[in-house]
Length: 273
Image (cartoon, rainbow, N blue to C red):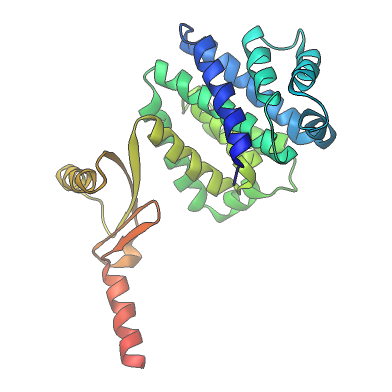
């Protein structure tokens, strides 16, 4: 979990980024996001650099000057200014700087998709790709293997998705491959689905059913959950015949399991006592 001081540094940089890109186009914001995520990749590969940029014995202006000198002529002025603001803040651990830089890049990517009115598409594409991966054990192992070169895994994703998803979706999947905030690939993908939904001011409800819901049934369930949680809900529906019937719904840490499989398992346990 990020410390309060790192959260303050991230909030300051995010505010600066928002102000600097307020009148920018979706493409311009996407370019800044790509630069920030490229710097995150550099920080991931350079532990000594992370330590230097979070060294508490150096003042914030000195750390900001260091990142500016490293990025001079390589990124836009907006990116340099935002990252200088970020590293001038305090971090309890060097890893927190990497996490904050990733989050800043992800937020910028989501902002670019929002300006292009593509956030809903991105959310659905991330979820669908997650379903494809979870349904293919060989692919899941390949993409989740931290020992496999990241370049090879990125190329595999590009080959699979070329021309089939939004550019922001593809870039976010690349972020998930590196392990967002230290998570595994599939957990990172789930977190990005939820971050995209949050950008749309929605909760995510993971729904498991034995057979596909009708459009009317989906709408009725979404309306019921919206009433319960006080905001709109994005349903992510997975069809799993093994549950036999009923429905399971997970929203955050809340689980509502009304499946026939659960009832049968409960009955078996009761008879076994």
